[in-house]
Length: 462
Image (tube, rainbow, N blue to C red; front, side, top):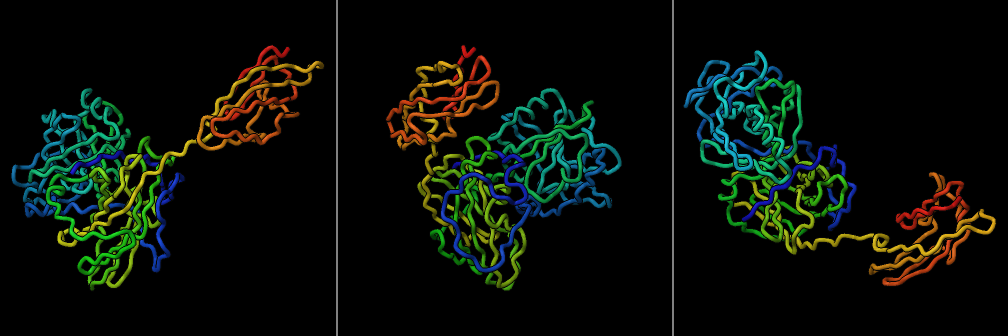
């Protein structure tokens, strides 16, 4: 199964749960009963990183005043209490654009500035305890800075851990900070944070990676088993899952060039007597070519319900949107949306969704060819007449209104006195229309005539 690596949507997109302004294509969900439960932050459980070796997580370092590292021993890391903990399943290497960095774990003490440890040139350092948002420092050299700045949407960063598992992150953006703040180290969203350390610069380059999918997860996927259609409920143990609707947002101006949102609105019924944690759900989208996509937070927040974060009490119905950043056009004709609860691989459902990528709508006005054949002042030199043709090469008829015909001189619009034929003009596909328009003469030597946003300069009016 191949895996597509989407870039992160710019921060201005779908902010604060707002919907994108672009076209939303697809079947809307039916009327719903019950309160919509939304979330603000996507949290994917990374407990597997720790549980595989039996060790527990160490404390998250104080992010406000990070200081010198102390290299841990091979089998233990000393925490603030001085008690050794078993080595966690820690990152051991990082690969960017074919270049690999060894990674060492460091315990940070909150007593000064965060800087690159002496004597470890060329080695990346992982802030011990950051196991959801992996925070890794890279030495600030000219070569490393050039490497971090060369990352672009679609580039992948691979992190390998002591267990041999590989985790993949897609480049999501970069910024320069004077000093790391608390939000840089927040363990609320699965991602990778790379920070340049050392050097004499007053700012630090920070690169963000969006969590995609681990090779281990991909290899451990079970047969997808139960398949249902859009709107059909699927019973998975004591969970009932229904996809209420799906939509395709493909031309929002805030989306990266060549990308779109695909939004899946779903309903979860908790039939058990236990509280359900939505962070234990995994929802993936597969297109018609077999590419898979992980949930994207900005896309989810742009949906009807937003990302589902709150726990689901017993005998309760909750609603959420699983949003995905996908290529435009998205490949059909069938999409597969897979839902499973982590820890229960036998409970998997795949929802089959018919999909035909909408054709891009081309404005008929863009397919018109305007030609001017003549321009002439009246005998008393108070009026300017313009002759020309409109040729339409599109498949739908073209309508030209009076507002589409303008003349200006030195930025001032001139009044349209008459037109033959009188607007609006209708031009059939493949047809040509001849026209004559008469304007008040501008006071300047030159004038700009515009028809359907195509402009022409007329000179010699003195």
